[in-house]
Length: 79
Image (tube, helix red, strand yellow):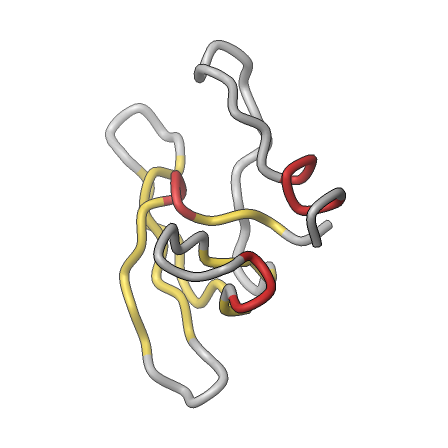
């Protein structure tokens, strides 16, 4: 957890374009109040594109089938 998860969520400015998150992708929800080992796995249910066509928000579904709207800045895609 201490070695792999920080590599998955690089701390860079948004100068590089990244691929958009797609529906049915599995993501980790980054919660600064929890240890990395307790971050929740979520499934992307729908994407909410912005005016420029990039994905900035998504609707995610948790394991208990609750739906949330989250910014992609706090999500880490599981590749």
